[in-house]
Amino acid sequence: MSDPILQVRGLHKNFGPLHVLRGIDLAVEPGERIAIIGGSGSGKSTLLRCLNFMEMPTAGSITVDGRRIGKVRTDSRGAEQVTYPESELCAVRERLGMVFQQFNLFPHMTVLENTMEGLVTVKRVARAEARQRAAAELARVGLSDKVDVYPSRLSGGQQQRVAIARALAMEPEILLFDEPTSSLDPELVGEVLRVIRTLAEEGRTMLLVTHELGFAYHFATKVIFLADGRFHEVGTPDDVLKHPREERTQAFLARFTEFSF
Ligand SMILES: Nc1ncnc2c1ncn2[C@@H]1O[C@H](COP(=O)(O)OP(=O)(O)OP(=O)(O)O)[C@@H](O)[C@H]1O
Ligand SMILES: [Mg+2]
Image 1 (spheres, helix red, strand yellow):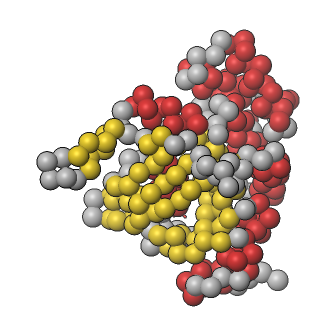
Image 2 (image 1 turned 90 degrees about the vertical axis):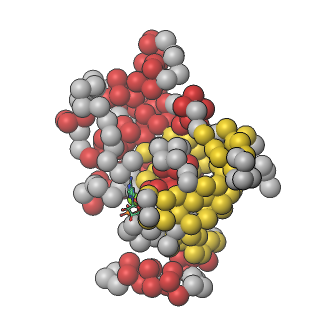
Image 3 (image 1 turned 120 degrees about the vertical axis):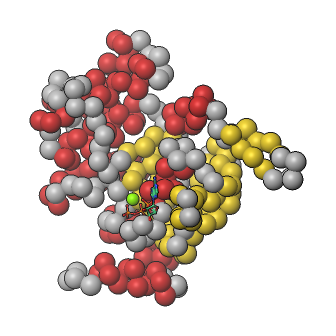
């Protein structure tokens, strides 16, 4: 086993009185592909958002490449207080690229400008080189013919592929996908899943929140069923999706297969 790139210990997240994540432990090794499934409101997005610090954890630790994120001090009562300096969080976000359900492209920028934006403003890459690297990532997702188009002219599937190219351009060590196909018309889901499958074949490390259980079965090296802010069941795709041991996992999966034939 190699050392984990990402290690999460005892992660909790509260929104006021709402205790969403209730003690998450997770180690992600290079090349692992983890599918996270669970009901609406179970905390899947919150978990991904905590991993790249779009939300600050209420408690627990997140360690990237052996280095704990945040400045830790112990108060007079012995309790741990953690602050998260913005400079440190920017560095983490570069290493954990996120793809959202709603693409989040800039409408006033072309496809190429969207894809190179992070390289120029965050990584300080010269514009000419950024343009080249962005064009290469757009070619990878099959959008070389759309570089000069604005997002409003693209289908949802194409917009999502731009969002993936934009994430890839930053050369992240881990890709986080939050239901990347949930807002797409059914006939556009396949083109996005195919891109994600290619990334899997390249051996990239990925966390994918998804309701596409058939895809998760073939894609994932590990499946996690999240319920009530905890990992209710964890295992291989075969364990969790085909032979779930927990009643709650069985009930969740039954809802998905109810209308299949
Ligand atoms: N910024 C926030 N402020 C307050 N409550 C929040 C916030 N973000 C999420 N929540 C609440 O936390 C809980 C978990 O939300 P989350 O979005 O993580 O669920 P999810 O598993 O991603 O659901 P879905 O499958 O519908 O996307 C929900 O009850 C949600 O209303
Ligand atoms: Mg969500």
